Length: 134
Image: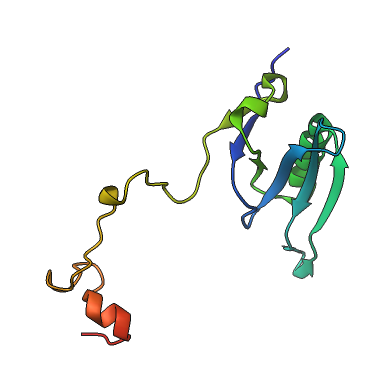
């Protein structure tokens, strides 16, 4: 039976979340580790930790337990391919993070320095390379 739990796909752990890293194990079956960063509780910095490897289902349950126990915002998942995701584990939302460009022409980058300063930074390409501000 499919679960309605939602997990966000992520390449790496971010502050405020528990991270589950899924990968093929030594025996070829999927295995997962759970990790979380430092957090502050009652004014005291608590150190993060990691657990695993374990089954993916166990890791997702443990990650949710850790998130609930320590007040992390969400559980994020790293998985090498969407094809490896089992719908019984829940819903895997699209990957967050920087946009991936398929073609260099999609990038809006001034590369000749002749277009004047950037409207957002006030820097020209030459200024950025030389470290000088206008």
